[in-house]
Image (cartoon, rainbow, N blue to C red; front, side):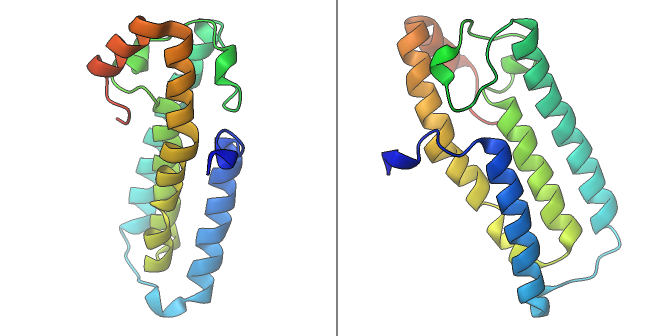
Length: 153
């Protein structure tokens, strides 16, 4: 399974998952529901997710380190301030929130059931390999950070 590690950029994964959720929702119309609150809730969650994601990217840019998710070994600085005081992975947390918002917006339980596949994939094939790379690069400093701050928000 290591062959999948750091291979699919998270933005590509999110796009593929969004399309799959839409397609599955259309393929299983019997699992559709109608809730007036769904669209406003989806908008709110998507906006919060986008802000969290943006804050993560801004933190990396401010510290002038790479945001390249397939080459974590290129990291030059361990970012531990800003949003990174609360989450080790705000970009992925924000993306997962935006995808959850999409699932709500689609108003189909099939899309909602598919949603956890994205964060689970990210955890196994993106985050864990990144953590190994950051441990190799930053050693004890990263280990202390891992103990202080949660992986997800």
